[in-house]
Image 1 (tube, rainbow, N blue to C red):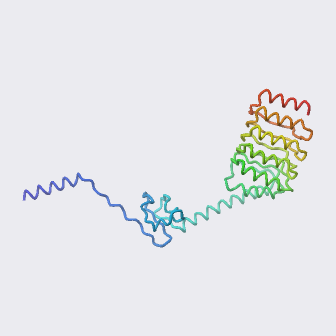
Image 2 (image 1 turned 90 degrees about the horizontal axis):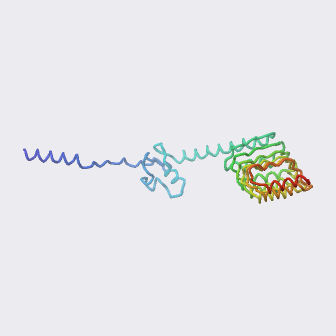
Image 3 (image 1 turned 180 degrees about the vertical axis):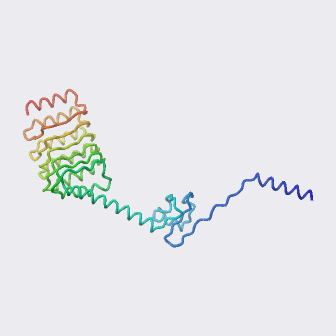
Length: 272
């Protein structure tokens, strides 16, 4: 009896010291061919290939995402995608409606990547818009081209003021805008704001060429906080002294034009 008792005590002692093996919960099973079930907190590698689906498929993408719910069905994912698409379409219709309504419209820091095509489409059709602001939308040169093309295609446009400041347009974007402001369909445009857009001397050269054309009616040009420098100021100075230039207000603060740039502009104003 004593031998059996000692053996039982030793077995109980060593069993406490040895690590216990915790059994993982079983993988959930799909109740239908569309169900993609997932245990919260477990990686998607634990799911069977049948539940994951082929790699790259929508079923695989849904199963691989971390979800706080016990399961995600394909119907739920598709419904979420339809709702997201509905929200995007509704927002773009609102932007189109605001532009087509006309008057003065501000779209400052409101546009997403997919909205600019709808906005450009409205710009190409509006006949009542007089001023629009696209400030702080990170348009870049590609989206700026869409806006410039839309302005050129609208023969009935009465747009007088365009604000594209703080949009990272660069020299290439300015090249597209230069073609637009000298186009006959944009003859009513009087004010253009291009501050804070990383515009260099090459961009200034494109604008200077557009200002010398007789079709350009631009009177106010804001180019503050760019990279025009002295050579770019020289291009603009020669445009100002040209007889076809209608410009009356030019802002060039924070462009490092230096004393040479100031001399170019002073001489242009003296003989214009």
